[in-house]
Image: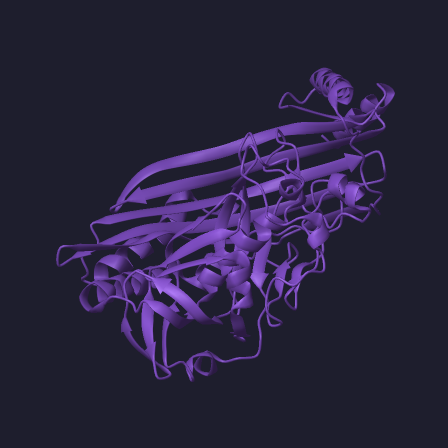
Length: 472
C-alpha cells in the first residue's frame, strides 16, 4: 500500500503536476445501538482507499479510488490532473501553497485495553451498565437511546515536497439520549457523548453510566423544583459545556480561513471576522481561546494534519485580542504566513479542508466559589439543551438545561430554560473572570460539501459574565 501512495505522487508529477500528494486511509470499526434496553443494531465498518490532490497552473484537482491497484490509482491520478487543468482555466486567482517544513514520521496512539480484543457482546456491556444505572434510579425514563462506537484510522500521507507521515489513531465514543417524564412534564439530556483517542480504558475512566445516572436525577429535580429564571440584566456563570459550545461556534468557526475568504458561503455560511481584524480586541483581557489538536487522548487528536504539516496549539484569541486564524497551506499563502496545520479530511475520498480539532477557553485563576461569591442576583448555566447561531457567527443564543438561581453568592433552586441571547463580541467582552477548572465535551463537527463530520472536543472552565440580559 505504501508503494501505491508513492506511485501516485510520481505519476502525478510525470503528468505535469507542480504539486502532488496522496493519502492512503484505512478505517475499521464497530457501532452498537440500544433503545429502551433492546439491542437495535450492530454495524461493522471497513473502508480503504487513496485520495490524490494535484496543483497545476494554479488549478487544484482531487480524485480518489478504493480499488487499490496501480491501474486504478493511475486513473485516479489522471482524473485529478484533468480537473486541475480545467480549474486553472476558469480561476480568477491561481491557487498557491505556502512553503512548509516536512518530515518523515510515524506516530500511534497506544491502547491499554485494545478494543479489537473484545467481542461486540463484551462492548455492549457498557451500554447495559448505562441502562441498569438509569433504571435503578426509580425515575421514569421512558426513552433511552444508547450508542457505542470504536474505530481505528490508519493513514499514510506522501507529497512531492518531502512529507511521509504515517499514523494509527484509535477512537472510542459512547453516547446517550435520555428523556425523563414525571408530573406530566418532559426534560431531556439529548445525545450526551464521551469520546477519546485510546482504548476501552478511556471509557472505564470516565464511567458514562455514572454520568447518565447523575443526568436523570438532575432532570427529575428540574421537573419537581424548577422555577422561572429571572429576566433582565443579571450576572451569569457558564459551565465548561456552555463555554465549549460558545468557543466552538462563535470563535472556532468564524476563525476558519476558508469561511473568512468566502469559500464556505454557499455551504455553511460566512464570517463576520475579516483578515484585517487580526490584532483587534474582541474580548476582555481574561479571554484566551486555544485550538489544540495535540492534546493527548483527545477526540480531535492528531500530530500532523492532512497536508503533512506538523500540528501545534493555535491561539485564536489571546488576552482578548484576535491572534490567529485556522489556516491550511492555500490560505497561508494568501496571507503570507505559514500553515498552522488546520487541514483535515474525514476519509480518503474527501479533500482536506480547514477544520477545528479541540477548541477551549483557557483556564484562569478563580475557584467556582470565588466566581459566585459577590453575585447578588444571577444564574448558573451548567449545561445547555439547545443553541442557535447565525451564518456569520455573530448573533447567538444558548438555552440552559441544568441551571440554578444565584442569590447573594449562593446557589439556590433550579431554574428552567434560561436563554442567553447575545452577540459574539458582547459575549466575550462581558467575561470578567475565568475558573481554574478545565473540562472537555465531545462533538462531531459538520462542514463541507459533501459533508465531512470530524471528531472534536470543545470545552473550558467555568466563566463569569457580568450584566447580561437573560430571557425566558
